[in-house]
Length: 330
Image 1 (cartoon, one colour):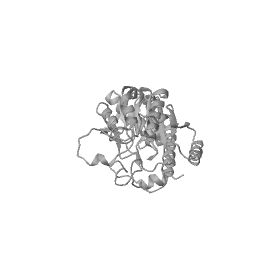
Image 2 (image 1 turned 90 degrees about the vertical axis):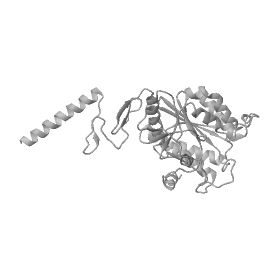
Image 3 (image 1 turned 135 degrees about the vertical axis):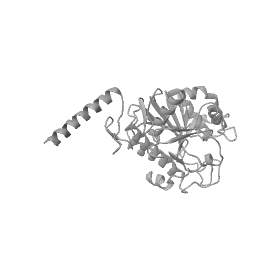
Image 4 (image 1 turned 30 degrees about the vertical axis):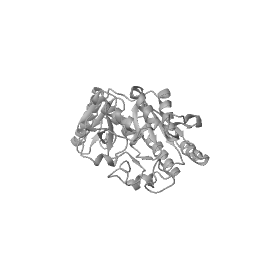
């Protein structure tokens, strides 16, 4: 009987201690089984609290000062273009609409996953389509109908391809930038239709943005892909801890990146220059932004770019490409 009373007494004291820790804002961990009773989670789960604190075992917590309020995603789709300005086959050698649909599906799943933890953040998906077939449009609508996600499909108009823009590919880029400037309030994610995302991608980008921007006390940019070119040169870099990934500072990206509304306004002319397609490479205008504002990419990758396998901007190293591809089969 004494043992039972002692056990009950210990449990009572533990419950009181946990409640006190919660009130004071402290987290405690049982290093025997990695349970965190104050959060009612295990340490291997996402234990950060959106907009409040980023928690890492064993580094402790960072109180978030740069809270993410909303995320607007602009997805550029085109079912008719294979590899823009290239005569090479993509990895998996599928039809272009297959890449676009799997990319869209992966983003929808990633948004859904992020909402489980960051449910107070408003997320909207806008699809800017460049003259795709009606069948492809209907297939996108079928996918969208399976998710409870705020969305819209906007068709690129012929009169939006003007003389100051190289072609419809860059016209759709400019359309995305213009819509973001008019309708977005906080974070903006521009994404091409040949990037297949890990389910945790959106959650990790939001968590990493809050943590790193808080640490640096400034707005940052994120690219979700760990490109092979990053390993071609022995360049020094900075490594930061995100939510569940490491993030390295990078000086380059393609047209898929995350930016804040504040930085979009500051570097509007750079974005318009990129959207003109007149530079070679076109991304030079983006890289000039990264000379002034830090941009980070994850290690390992959160999204694979379905380019040619030999491209330095192609598939990411040390991840299971086939598994990501198969997991997003429609």
